[in-house]
Length: 388
Image (tube, rainbow, N blue to C red; front, top):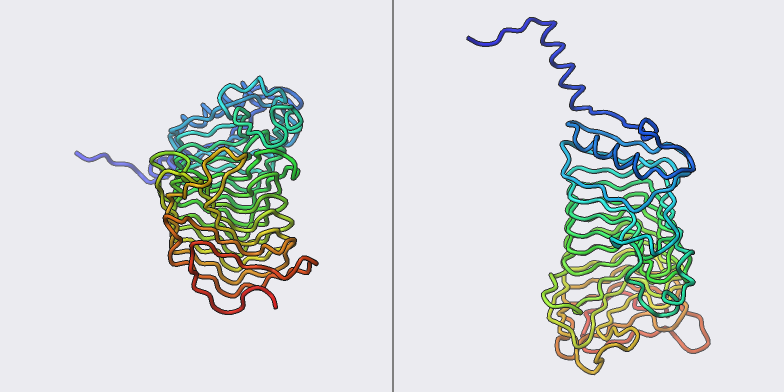
């Protein structure tokens, strides 16, 4: 015999179901968090409760300044979860505090939003001047500010990453994640402070974002697939980079990268692809760099298969990374050096199917006109090339 419900009962049932789907807003002050105090225990408990509650749940950090220790936000969760940061979060300044390689780490979540207009202040100035992190040395033991590991269907919007100790933002194993209206801020002398680094991830979008830092604004490691970078303003910094590739065995291909409608201001590079000499085998293909504006950029377009920082490689042995199907189109602006275009490909595996179309870059230095340098490559060119 079927279950019979009258109209009031059905209405109540639907109301309860809607309430369950809607979830709840969880303010961390209900867990004892106070302004100008350490909110790590309160935020951790609020996250766990929200994660285990069905429906769409939002953890809210209200306006104010708070201290936050190293923390991991783990999934999977029972519904979509949002962390809304409206205030300013301060990291510990002492590098010895961090043991896991990150400050704030989000892991294994399907359906996630980070928003709120707030700021993650990593207090990187406390370590940049230390002897082990000055000059050209790599500071790999310093924490990444925001780490996203194995996130699916994510949105990170309206937040600021300030003065990271190492990378600002790192993605690993992510799928269908969008960054929109994100601000990344650090001075140009801050070492190894890549803005957003992507590795082994697919379907990543970075849209309408401003990045000013001391290293690559955006860097794409191996396994980056179907990446859209659109409306990004980069500078100061080292530009938007694919690589470096080929340093490690069994690196996954980089394929399907679109960098469009971006602006570069006072950067070392505009867009570049970099691979190590004497490398392991790898591939980088199907990339489009289009409608880009350069303002006082050293080298606007660079393929560097001789990438060898600190001279810690055998530069005379060609790279084994194969680069193909690359398009540079409608790139304009001004240069700070005459080396506007440098396409330096591998002797063993010359770059294939590279197109250069409508490049209008002005250089007014005394050491001569802008140059277009090609090594081990025969690009297809059309339209204007440099500014005459």
